[in-house]
Amino acid sequence: MVAKMKLLITGGAGFIGSNFARLVIGGSLSGFSSVTILDKLTYAGTMSNLESLPDDSFNFIHGDICDEILVTRLINKHDVIINFAAESHVDRSIKNAKDFVLTNVVGTQTLLDAFKSKANGIFLQVSTDEVYGSISKGSWVESEPLLPNSPYAASKASGDLIARSYNRTYGLDIRVTRSSNNYGTHQFPEKLIPLFITNLMQGLKVPIYGDGKNVRDWLHVEDHCRGIYAVLTGGEAGEIYNIGGGTELTNLDLTRYIVNSMGRDFSDIEFVADRLGHDLRYAIDWSKIRTNLGYAPKIDFNAGLDATIQWYKENESWWFPLKN
Ligand code: NAD
Image 1 (cartoon, rainbow, N blue to C red):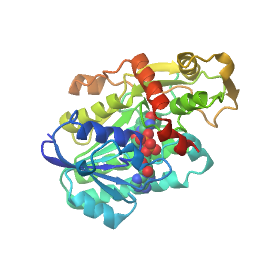
Image 2 (tube, rainbow, N blue to C red):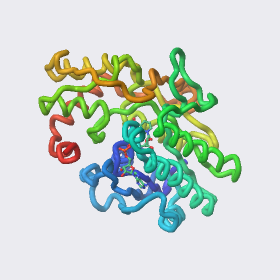
Image 3 (spheres, rainbow, N blue to C red):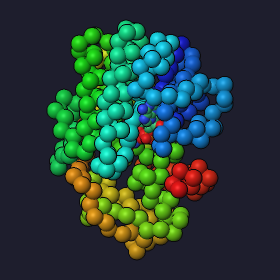
């Protein structure tokens, strides 16, 4: 139950956290008595992600999840903590992994220590399907050992396992979710879908890594948020839940769809040197959350992607300053 619980969202000025905040404050995900957002406002976090929300509908704290004093004070005042805060871009982690370890590992551990001193409430660690590594056939279940390949995925796997260990060691109510690739509004324009949409709007080509045969499962961000909510309201302490059920596509097929939808053609695609250590395919088995918690994604991929393209067309004033 989350009725009348005070919610703390870390990383709430980023893509998924701000979508989660909008759904809570808009009433689609109900039951919280207050919302606090803690965000460091790195290059990926922006107050413009929150500007559609009334000023008095949430408290905003500008700060770092590695700040022990700050997070201890905040966690003590809240009942539900969802940790979205992260360095999240694989390419940046390949260039320099330090901030990934600091935020995704040390930051998560700092939050968990603060949660340990409070000793009640729910802590939900938002993790990713990338922790499992690549799979050529079939799909990973939650009990699969983790074999992350990029520094980003390895730092997320570390945070994810430390979170689980605080449940096993201290008996705290900690839950972990591992979602597939998200798409939707307010995603920073360095990530594949918004990068490609905005490049096409700017008359630029879209760069596909390698041969474009890498496969990802694409889940609308609002479906991911509904999955997180299902885990908060119906999930169990110490459990891990895969959140999938999007649409599996090669990067090339996804790009063709975007290019065609925007009235462009194959000549706008350019193949570039592959990402180092590029995982070929991610796929998760999400039958646990479907069977135990009745979760199912609601947003059809084509409709969701068309609406996302339309949002970027209508919100150049949001993405242009971030991209430049
Ligand atoms: P994002 O990069 O858009 O947002 C991250 C937010 O965290 C930003 O607002 C940033 O300012 C903030 N932040 C970074 N370091 C911080 C720190 N030390 N202290 C406080 N705030 C800090 O990322 P996103 O795509 O919204 O991802 C959110 C979470 O979901 C991440 O944990 C990510 O690993 C996970 N996830 C993302 C996807 C996806 O497809 N985007 C899929 C599965 C899981």
